[in-house]
Length: 232
Image: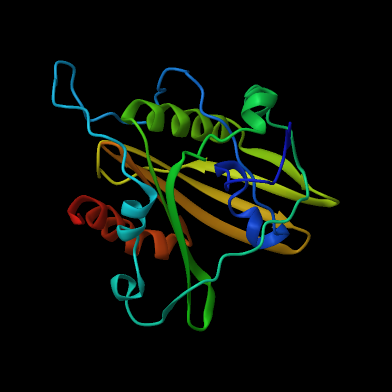
């Protein structure tokens, strides 16, 4: 499966950015929501369907340095290299097909993103992504990719001539929002190793994804969810 590095960051190669400098994307599918997500909405709930939020509104709901606390600095947006990414050893990811591989699973038109570094500790980087669409589309897109990834405990990603070994492990997500997904990703390039936690929370028509070290995600996930819920 070849992923073209031209649009949004994909779940499947998020932490490869730190090791190989790559950005990718994938496409939502109409698959039913699988058991990896935990729906909180009940049948028979006929509340009005909220309209997706604009990117401008989402950007106001992102965490900032004040929210994170002393020592965090906003990280400039990194340029997007044009190297292709080839995934090997994960049939579930390959089964997404070429359309999914080069499309926009998380490249919903309404989105916002921010990354931070922590003074004196490069391992405490934290990234937040916000997306808005219908609840069904958000749920399907995230469920499909998370499920594909956790179905492969080990696989490889080739970024140009660089081989990245990836390990995935499903984690229990905190009971926030309407649906939750979480996984632990281990990336190895030669002697370099990076461990990243990635947790996604859907709140109605907004998806919150917080990625980073275990401590950083645990410390700031609830803040991110709370800010999405209360900011207008």
